[in-house]
Length: 432
Image 1 (cartoon, rainbow, N blue to C red):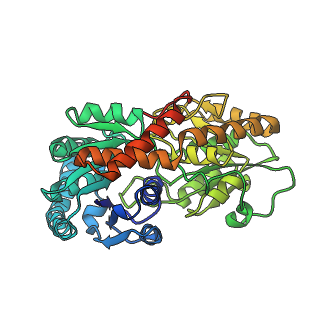
Image 2: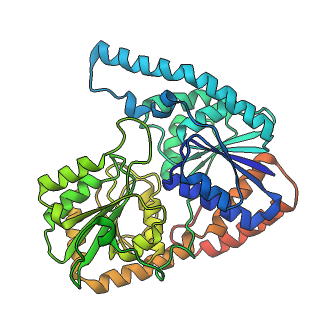
Image 3: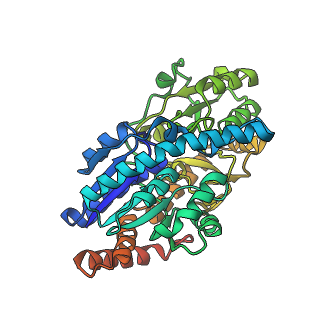
């Protein structure tokens, strides 16, 4: 079975880490019965990581206008006729490059002759649907909500008949997608975590050195937010919470950076530093660049904060931090609230509530026994719910159902799915 994945970016965000784990776990499950390829819309570390996992990489760079256009860039502060004309001009300019790119992608796919094309990212959902060979099955991996993106929502609804199915990363994403893709076949497969890599024991990052700060004193409680600089990821709320929690025993860290190229969708480092300065917390907050390996970062933190201001489709950083045995504070909305039991294996807060977040941080800073209890329970939950073997089995079973293969790989997938289901039935949140 030959599978070709499509990715619009070459950097390593959450969706890209899931893609890498899919390649690795599918390879472990099916071995040489799977021939895995990845088409990248931009250069970056993702390509090197795919090669390390014995995947074939094909670079097909997105043209500049097509790369940066998106709902965030098309939202303009100019109202009325001028704003609509400017937005229309951006779309027309991108459309002229879209036609050429679809032709190149179609030619590449015709050469590769995939049994199945698996797309990641809204742009590749559309481009892949237009370019797919007739002989190949085509599916979308929905890592985000559709309904909140007016341009992509309309485009996906229009092109949906060309997709044979979709994977949603949470029940929240599935419910949202059903509003847009009313007649599409959508199945939920929760993201997974490499539990051997993301574990409580192992190397810890030197956070102060990475942030360029003087070493913190003994007993300092380290609290961090690990996320891209997308504006809805909650860095602003986290900094506001830090200003409410001016405790000399607490040092906060923002770890991440801008990885996407859609205009207007992300904070810059300068914006966040300026906000920290205005809030009076610049001296107690460290800024660390995007890290390709976040496991040592999680292990160096005492508390990991998830502070997204909009409903989170899934929340991979939550699952990874839980796997590392950390105490996690989660903004309860969207797919994120499917991942934990409040007060049992993590603590929940209302989204966009900096005061509530500060209260939780203070609670955890003052109670090391609570941090330990939550961390141990979080690891148990991660082992039960986020194992990569179960993820690969479900993924392969869905592939096989689309292809209607009646072969050893189907039987192997079905067998592993049954094992995974029997393991997960004891979970309060079974994977569906």
